[in-house]
Image (tube, rainbow, N blue to C red; front, side, top):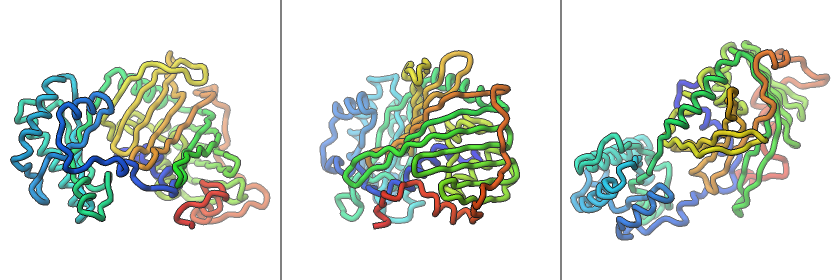
Length: 398
């Protein structure tokens, strides 16, 4: 699996996005500033100190190019002055375009423009190590692309103040190494997946389940939630997906490791394994792929256990993890927020009763069909076992 960046966290974003069909309007479009609003250095400084991001609509480029026009010089001077006043700040410079033209071209152009701003700030004496450039093309509009005004708003450069806590990295690495070293582990979990109605009401779809695995290639997982009752078994050769509430199952010959299984579950079946990032052979690499902001937020208590509380950001999602303190640094809670979708829906999983090594009771990884169970192909099983209860109707179904 995880040799492609960010697939585990993205899997949760895909899962949320696949069922969140009620309201896909970008919330930022409702509060976007006017494109001719004058630049205010104090406003930028305050924004970076508080909410940690700021859109520079005042930087102008040659049409369809990454050449900064001369009239943007004073604004760049002000940005450099602010950075000189706060020498501990690190900035991520993110380029955005409107939706005109090819997506690949927009992606490249947005990165080139961010790099041009970075170079301009370095020329003004800012240490290059404090600046990172990124481009996201037209993926994050703040206004509709159907009007000239909206397109102008969407063509912007965003400044983001970022943190990088070595302590948080060390704590996450210790947890990851501990999990990866366990040949056998099991846990119970409670999960909540948020969906949002057209009226902006958040609803939490709750489920509980179990996971048991033996490395490198055996796993059994269950998840039940009142309208959903799923089981998955993998014995290193065959993947079996069972819809208990539909009394149906599907099987696929799939020789390989647990890491490969996670990839297949996400890409082919749209059924991400609960807490998949944490179960891989190298959790740290999977979790930290594409992370640009790392915070140690101190401690918290989850399920009565004192935990280290860490927070991370990527372009697509923000995520937090609470790790038990002591000689068994196991995750207690894991929360992923899809931040560029309206109302930022969140997926949260809380872990209970971790077992490792000899404390893991022998489990059954082979499949025995229940009486009367119908074998179907995976696509048919997905239709029979939906993520949403029947009384929900998504916009696409209306």
